[in-house]
Amino acid sequence: MTNRLKVKLKSNKKRTNSQRAWLERQLNDPYVHQARADGYRSRAAYKLVEIDQKYRILKPGQKIIDLGACPGGWTQVAVSQSKSQTHEKSCVIGVDLTAMSDIPGATVFQGDFTEEATQNRLIELLDGKANVILSDMAAPACGMTDVDHIRIMMLVEEAFNFAENVLAPGGSFVAKVLRGGTETQLLNRLKSAFQKVSHFKPPASRKDSAEMYVVGIGFKG
Image (cartoon, rainbow, N blue to C red; front, side, top):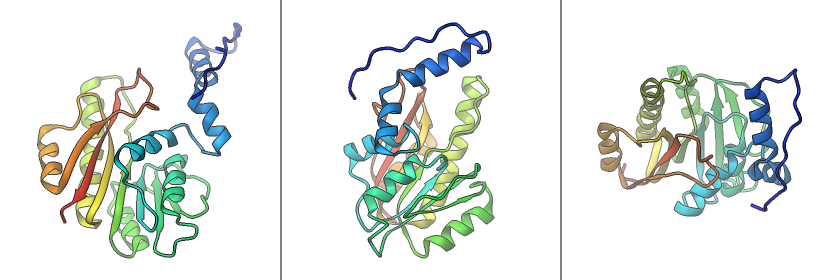
């Protein structure tokens, strides 16, 4: 990312300190500017780009499910890398609690992934086995580290339970976790299900963020 002159906002009584800090961070974030230039809906797209650069999990012709997809940055990357707009065997499906606008080359819908009806719809749309399951899901943070960790680990476990049923042999799994990584019991399950399991914090993930990603490669089936 190219260096830019730092922007500092003038005092504005209508903004709170936290609002001003957030806006300054956005204005000075090179990934935000690059996302606009590249047509991505969010800077988060580069997290998946960097994960894929390291692990090479996205390929043309794949079937990919994106959990926690809104606003769609990861789904856009999945569409691009799988060539789903032109490759007849490829499909990309995104779901999120929040409604999102259509993405060419993908099927996106609003739903609660933890509900059986949503998972059944994903399976129906998939029409076969998935090659990649992506999860950037995160529960609303309450500020209590232990509670936030438990909440996100519940989502990771739910995503992995789903992946075990729908991933094709050789498939990959990526899920957001918090600093400290995956809990021992779930990590052991992942290691028994995949040929390789790693934790990775993409450069696009902000330094002050506790997030990182667990990556499973080579699903054993």
